[in-house]
Image 1: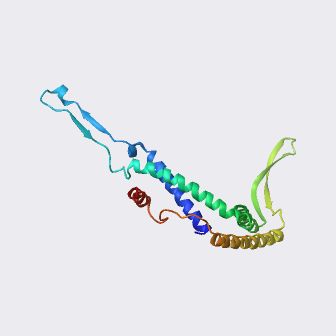
Image 2: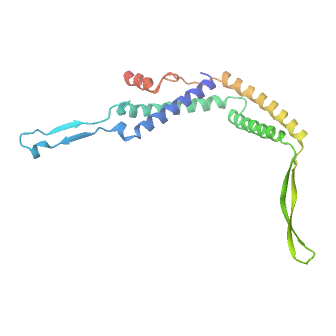
Length: 210
């Protein structure tokens, strides 16, 4: 498989592990409940009875099968991690760094596009200001006045426009290199189940194989 398929397989393994560990973490899924009715103590002619009141509707899987499969998933997770690491080490560039830095390019371009949309503006607030003066009698009085709030951009819009184009162009170029590497880099690993199969189908196939 290629590197892109390997990442998809790795994600599938992780999803299955989270799914089944969550299943085992729910007490109802891994226990049986039996009610013991001690009728004979209350009435000699009655028989004691054990009633299974387990809610089997919630027990989707056999807990023993899930426990065994968790070990398989751990083993496969280790195998694919080593295979991916080996494949990456043979590449001409560090793909992890390239992906991380390119995300930052995209984020920066997004922020700068938003900056580019900002415009200067002004708002007139009627009677928003308060002042104090002395009247002709020498008494201090207040008066109201209008306040204009002027907001102007505090950056070079032309520079921002140029940076957006530069970042986007660079990001597109690196994305193309990453995509090519994902397709062309081979990983020495075979996933032992279908990534499109459901968790139940995969678990059943492994259980039957045993």
